[in-house]
Image (tube, rainbow, N blue to C red; front, side):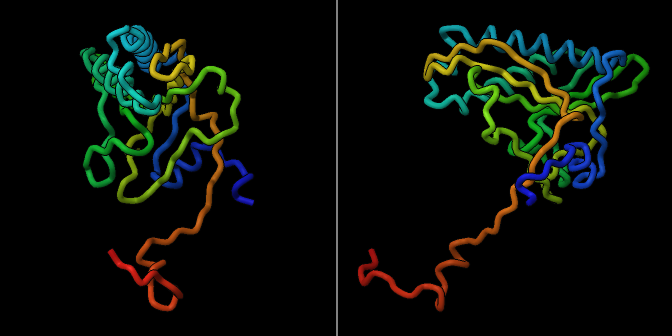
Length: 209
């Protein structure tokens, strides 16, 4: 049953993009610098977006707050001269906001060498940390695949207290997805064009407004 079997995420990425998921090495200077910059940016984002005048206070759903964290992280990290933080481009060369991953961080060392990291920020309610509901999605497609580099793949989980409309963001965790396993959700699909065809429709209303 493919819905139960787990697959190593690095193998899924390699099979779908031809790119390597690089494991975090805390002794690597470039990787260490990237992690420090993400940590600093996450602390700053939480502090700013917890303010009474924060734009997330006007939101109806916590999912809508994700884009504010993404934008805040991107601007903060990108402001440092050794870093760029951008929306990843797909295989067509176009920036694409939707789909995994959300951000591409590139660190350029003094010798010109570059280290790439994909960062996917996610918000979650603190008490749901042990939940088994699906919260991570990766749908590889040839034309829209956003993974174009061998890179570290990191997930930044930001927890909140669950108080609707008055959320307090409490802490963050960085996850190394080189150690991550995923499940495949296989499903059959059809469109309205497929459904509402002669031979399939057997009755319809006489009124057509």
